[in-house]
Every structure is written in C-alpha cells, then in structure tokens.
Length: 341
Image (cartoon, rainbow, N blue to C red; front, side, top):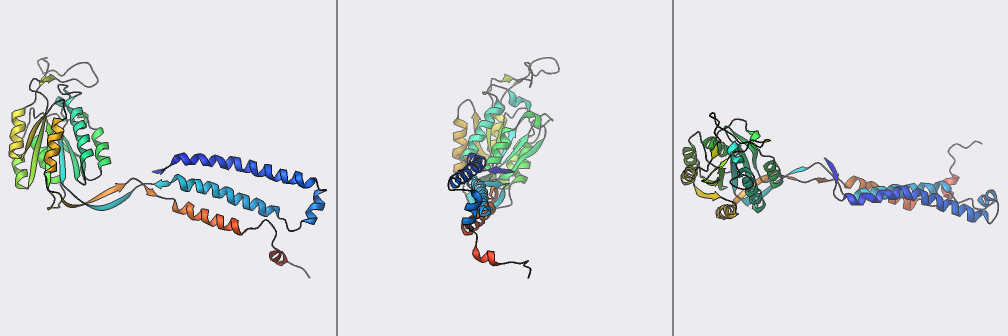
C-alpha cells in the first residue's frame, strides 16, 4: 500500500498550476517594457547574448523542483517492513469463548462485547509482551498467532463474532491444548493462558487440559463471564431468543464451579467478570507478577520511507538550474560541429 505521511502538504501541488501563469505574465511584462525602447527585432540584435530558451529551461527546472519538493515533504511511504526486535516480556495466549451463549446481555452490552472490551484494554497495557488469540465454541481455531504486533491484535479482536465458529458447544479443553501448541519454542519466556468463558455446556476434559498446561510450565487464568441468575440468548438479526426443542426459552448461566476448577487445576486465578473493570485490574495485576525474559519478535513497522529517490532528483535539478545562465555561453557558441568550408 502506498500513502503519504503528511498528505496535507500535497496542496502545494496547486502551485504547479499557478507558476506557469505567473511566468508567462512576467515574460509578457518584460516584452512590454522592452517595446517602449523600440522595435523588438532591433532590441534583440542589441542583446545577442540573451537566451530566451535558457530562461524557459530554468523555469521548467524550478517548476519540476517544486513538484518534487512537495512529494518529499509529504513523506511518500510504501508497504511495510518486517523488523526483528528483542524485548523483555511474557507470552499470553487468550482463549475466547464465542459460542451463542456469549451473546447474552446479563453482562452489558453482551458477554462477548464485554470480553472484547477487556481484551482491548489489556492489549493497550501490554509492554513488550507477546499475545495470541484463539476462538472456540464447538471447535477451536487460532485467530491470531503469537505476536508482539498489538495493532494487528486489536484489529483481529474487533472482528470476532459467534459466526466465526459454526459448530456450537464449548470445547474448553481443546482450546487450552491448542494454546499450548501455539506458544513460541522459546523456553525461557514465561507463558500463561487467559480463558474467557461462561463455562456452560463444556464438552471435554477442560480440567485435565489445565493440569497438562501446568506440567509444561504454563498457567491458566480464567475469567468467568456471565451471572448466576442467567439470561436468554438473543438470535442475531432478530428480536427473538433461542429456544430448545420443546419451544422453551433457553436461559444461559455462568458455570462458576467449572470455571474455578479449571483455574485451580491451571495454577492460575479465577475472577468473575461483571459490569465493572475489576476483572481487568485483577488480571493485569496477575500478569505483572510474571517474570519477564528476553524474547525476539518480528513486527511490522507501519510503512517504509520512500522519499530518497525524489529527494536526489530534486537536488540534481537544483544543481542544473544553478549552473544554467540566462545568457548564451560564448564558448559553446564557438563550437560548430557541422561547419562547412
């Protein structure tokens, strides 16, 4: 992708329309002034060294220089460049439940939106850490591989919705196992999993997966999202709610007992997410306790600067303009390549 860092300077290109008009007006004014002294043919013979061609050449060189100068100050940038940087931090894999029950609004605005808000603020607070994102319902998928590119992390986070995982269910264990396989091979960096779920209708051995994570040196923290009172589940795009096979409205509730068991097995913390920011503060405090080690990350810088070429051409044009005189050069005039004797 091509862009300008300071596009507001491109308005200077309007000078390219104005300058020729001013130049022509200036040349006409000079001709009118000379006509006051007599016939133009006679005056030209009295000034044999004056070169109109060179005056025009000098103007067009300056005209092109204005255009190139505008491009340089506007800051042309192209694409992006991959940079390898070394930082001290931890690795965090987030497992986010995107099952239909996360559409319930017992947590405002919905469980899923509240989870995304917490994660967005968490990413803002990260400092030299790496983060990855897994979404799960009836299946688990990597949404964002482990990275230190926080801009991409927030971009991917904003696009998450239940439709990303068509198969319904809550395969917490599969999500934890996938997270374990998704960390970088760097053994020195401390690693942790953040599981955000209502833990309802889980379908696999989530506690066993958390215990396996601990064996590999990875802690599992759980953010239980929802309320014990529960809430109906809105059907996306309608004003209705999900119903069971008997036509009864489905009420989803936070399975706090399971969520706590997973956190205990994973040697992490459990915190219930409500309509305050308390869960974020508790989680951030837990991450701050982790020992940060040096990790190497590949990140994309925004754009690569491409002003160098127009800058060099601009310098060349200015040098040429400086050495071109308004008058004819007597030495060059004596050179006759095609003279006849």
